[in-house]
Length: 548
Image 1 (spheres, helix red, strand yellow):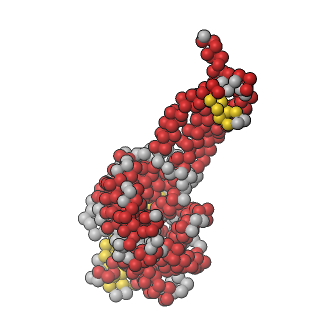
Image 2 (cartoon, helix red, strand yellow):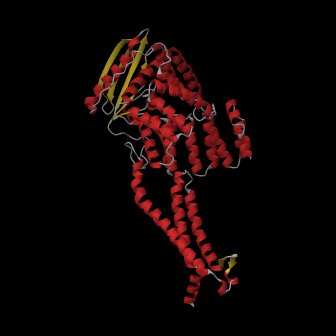
Image 3 (cartoon, one colour):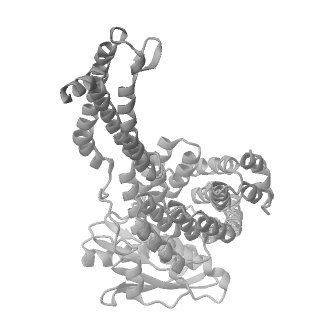
């Protein structure tokens, strides 16, 4: 009885169908496992595919037993006489199908176990780690020589000279940032302590550095006094200090002199073997440079109103010195940052068209400007010229290895290279541990890998830095989306929308979440109720889109 039953299973090709189904299911699960992270799809898709694969197996077996494929279509096996059955012919076809599927499975297995494992570490070029590990703390401490340049205190009687003291700090930071093997904390993190009572050791710990440079600037008429001191954070020991009294017309020489002195002080202590290349600033228009410094002061605040002020100063600098590359770079930077995808509400294509000529002019005047390459990378990336964008980001990092934003922007173009993207995010956070941009991108990276608790810690840390900033709430909204908590996600995105004064990227996040919840009317109203005419005009069709 048993023998005849198994013989009947074999005749009806039940065994062959089962084998073919299992091999095909294995291939589909493996491909899904690879495709889901590469396409940024939810991880539950992998579980769903596996689940339906398991559920489908008994149905495939039942179909093979109860039905037969004939030249006239699918028929019940009981309706076909023995002499009309073509199961033997079908079985031979199944043999070829099984062989083909086994070949595919074997090829994939060889690729996965041999070539993929060998090629994967090669994704990380430069000097980044391939390990994907969550740090015990939010900050990631660098190895080797490290320094943070805190904003020099404005000791002048005129508060309007604040931009000047910031400019001195920034110029010194820029010079130091180009020194190989010296980790320099970014401006955004170092300047987070501006105007605050600080403890050097605590600041150094938060910034992940072993040395702190601080100082002051006093400007009176055409004379300036700059005081600077280098402090070893661990011991609170003053490694070096100096005071410079100079005519204002000699400001560039003073900046270079201070930078050179700092490097010399660091050499013996930290084992640096480098020297600065002298800059030729003799042809720089001082008035134009002052306008540039004012523009730089405002653009770093990253608000629409301040970026608009920055653009005014950059344009004035260009009027006074049409060949000043930094002024053109600033104009391109501000023009693009007023895009709806950044900090303004100008349609992105229009913002790119305004910014591109300015950046091209800056690179024509000085091809060695890291920030010009960085902004051009953003413009090219938004234009979907990813390879060109990445080339600019790499050049920016080559010119300034401590350019934190460039690492973040570079990572944005690596959707198909998760290991390298993760390493770039880590590097950006290491260089700028208090940067909202670096932190939110790192939080997104943790969400991508399903490390929700760690991502939530990053968001909590961001809220301690600035609870009125939109980015922590954007990340919080993404965490709630990952967990399927759509109502909480909508609340978080709405808070981001309020904190951003209606920046369009937060508008989209809120509207898309409401649409996901089925609240299409409310989603559509987010566009039509916007207080910004540019948003209403540019997205006038979105109400119909959500309601269609």
